[in-house]
Length: 55
Image (tube, rainbow, N blue to C red; front, side, top):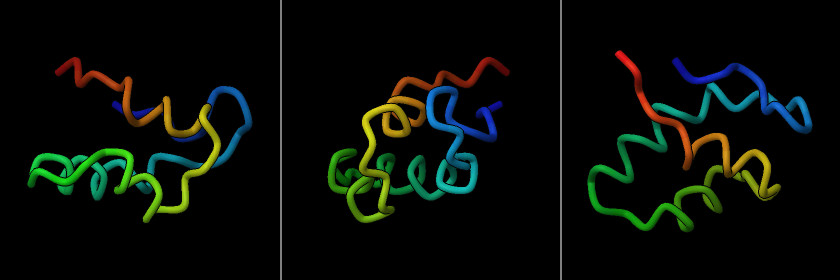
């Protein structure tokens, strides 16, 4: 379960997770996907890149 907000800055990041996951599984570069989604801060980018699904 992805955290709703970034732990460092508090920006809502959970809304971007499904699109990020779908696009990276389709073979897009994670850097380009994060740039397209408008996630420019390294702390928010970390939240999506480092997330591991536990289920």
